[in-house]
Length: 341
Ligand SMILES: Nc1nc2c(c(CN[C@H]3C=C[C@H](O)[C@@H]3O)cn2[C@@H]2O[C@H](COP(=O)(O)O)[C@@H](O)[C@H]2O)c(=O)[nH]1
Image 1: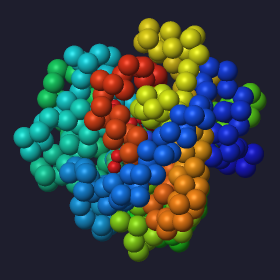
Image 2: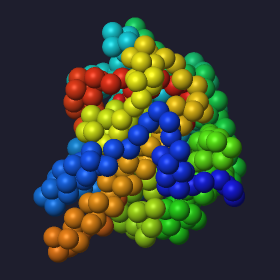
Image 3: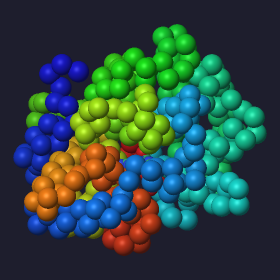
């Protein structure tokens, strides 16, 4: 961690030195104005984490905390080679794809009485058991099943050996500090150490560690152990969908060279220069949007809710990218296979 630029500073540094991805001030301003209106009309709230997403846990207890930790430990790489080769899961009469198909598979297993989110179970789960739990209702399996098994074993063993098998104990140790929880997660659970080298500088994205905190904040409704006093320090989650949304709204722009690669379906490696620029500029664009929303509240003399932060801006952009997939896909997402996002 020491000497590594943390996500917000990493985003700024990468943006200032980026060659193929650009944060567009006019687009940032327009998107900030759009989101200011939505937040001011209570259309973007923390309560949306449960209200808008039926697969998310609706409770706020220890089971919900361990559900979130399991989900975010495997919250990576759901994209499929092509739209007609998607991993799909049917659950309670509805068909899900992408991240939601994974959540549907989790809830299907729990409904079958499999103690999936219990570390004592998943630390020893076999490949066949995991294949059964994550089985597809299309002809295409979930990507990276072997890596998922390895990550589960490693993470489960640490949680059992160090934290009594429950992520609730890690949460308690953070003493309602999101920054302290981020440090605890990346220090104790290696699969969450989402870092890269950019122009010789170690930069951190910590996408799954940060979304874990965002999802815990949502599951606990910002109360009790989830009442993080420094939640504003968490940045957006540098995945492969938010860049699409930021480009769609004109807040980010790509070079011709990068656009050509994306349109060809180029497979990037985690840590490639363009991939790091995409992720870093996404972080910084959302930070700038957040700052401008806060300035708009101040300028209009309006009381600002605590919910004006990169996490809820991220949720809006991610949900938008899902709900308006055709428009968003005009510029393809960048393809990477890795365990970080
Ligand atoms: N930046 C950001 N990335 C997010 C999420 C989520 C799910 N969170 C939702 C659940 C409850 C909350 O209300 C959130 O709305 C998944 N991902 C990432 O997206 C990718 C999957 O995309 P697709 O193939 O289209 O399903 C993959 O990298 C996955 O890691 C988010 O919120 N923000």
